[in-house]
Image 1 (tube, rainbow, N blue to C red):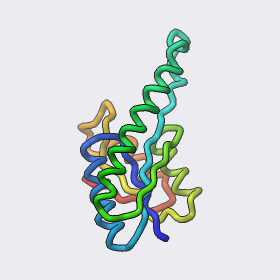
Image 2: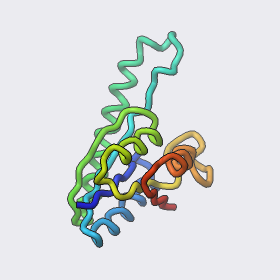
Image 3: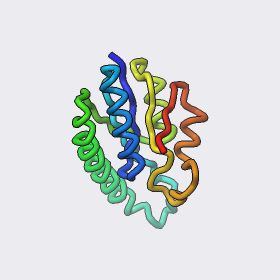
Image 4: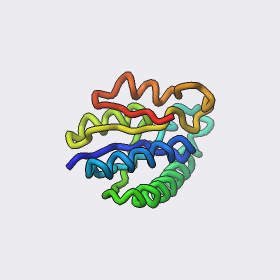
Amino acid sequence: MKKFLVGVDGSDLSLRALRKAGEYAFGVKAQLVLAYALAPVSHLSEVYTGQLAELEASDRKNGEVILRDAARVARESGCEVSVVMLNGSPAVALAERAEHDKDIDLVVVGSRGLGAMASAILGSVTDKLVRDCKKPVLVVH
């Protein structure tokens, strides 16, 4: 069965990418695999070390909510849907998942997400993913 890996982060463009992926997936009878990446927080200074577990737990909970909501939207397309929580920077985590899951045929992401430079023409995560991913990447604007 064909699979489309869809990166979700809760942004409007990620939702738009999800809906577009659902349209395409329905047409070719592909499964949607929705992925949220838990970005590492270990780069923070030692002053914040005591709060790392709290930050990670908060990010995981946020990711679970985003995945749950995205799965609800994705099921409206009539496709089979699964969710996965990835660890690492989003671009690297998505590229690695796509490379290691031989059933992934396409990676779908929004052109930018919720990052600090969300107004950039092509977000840094999307730019890195397009350059590094060995599978085709569909960028939705």
